[in-house]
Image (cartoon, rainbow, N blue to C red):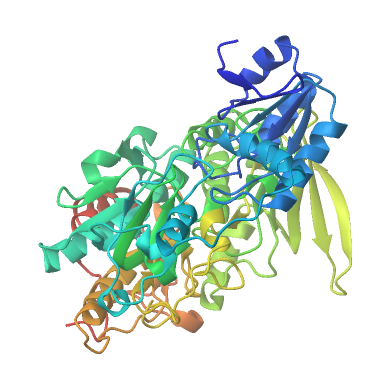
Length: 568
């Protein structure tokens, strides 16, 4: 085997993270069962999910069990569950995590529990600290300095994490993270700021809808992360795995912990494909696509160009999602192409929306409905996609009636554009920073955490009830930069966020309705034009101006058209 394994007994071996491709080799080596002890998403998007591994394993006749164990102390309960699996599963068994140390610790703990321990003398304070710093994986590399108020009352955890804390740690290298870092450095060039971001690529996601409509080059939506991170900031290329706000620490998936004096949480939102049965096996083939992924947006355009007749389905999941207008924008651009190709009369178009209205701001519904009528699209509300059979081209929806009863309905399709369900990242949703929905809790007016005043959040991952768009992040950057520095300097927070968000609704190729609004659906137009009218000017903004402003303004800390009332 090319995989490096460690044999613990005749039945059990352990190894590091495996890939889907490794499973054929594992089967050939004679393993009958695999146990996954690494939590999903711990290593970021590059880590295969347990669902993907399980499906591949079962296709090869291998039993697969998911028993996630967080980095840190191994519990007796987890050890007992692990060893119960060993007794029940057919062998030989291969268990894995990031390095292979967690399954080894689970196995060894059960053996230790069966031994009769000798009485131990009370540990000294130094010995207790040493024991508290033990890990099941390699010792974490830690950068930490406690705030002055804690210097005389260090906890054991803080004592293990002594070093040089950053002035500010930013979790996330998306539009919000890069933009707020650049803005802060413009205000205070001497700040020591670290950005925690595992990806080596940065994407301009608002253009992916245009790519799917044949109006934009996908290559123009991506740049190297190293080219957009402000050079004065330190880039920590690793995935965050958790927060310890009581000790001012961010834990990383590789075992390190990073200390901060102030923290900005903006890791973005997670595409929860696992909530749709069968979707991950058919994305990018069998007529199933999504403009919400870089590699799939060009496939949307391929499907649109090639469809001459049949049924096209477009879906929108329950809120919240990134850019609530994007699901219907995909439909409008495809329909506009079919209309101009004179094939629209041969194509049955349906828009399945898990919500009860076409758009969340009522003022924009009438002009949007005019385009729905133009394209002869059928709207199906309270209809949520739950399953896709790609091979047979069948989509299954759960449709709720007025009494709340849910019926499953199967729909055949020739083209299916899916907007995935979305959720906060796992490491955030399970942390002390999260609200009940899993997002980073903030005061929606100041974007400051209500329980940890040295923590702020912005972008898609924060709990503010604004629409999740790059335009919202552009305004939030100013709020966070000004308020965070005020908190740092002991001043009253000066800025108030009005909930601004914008959604350029591409209702046809060449025209856009520029929907700008704040909390409560209040219209907040930037320009003195009727905001309910589709205009070619706004199409030019969408295709030309906005991308240029993004790369050359927002990510560079230039706050053009981003100041809000109350900002100095």
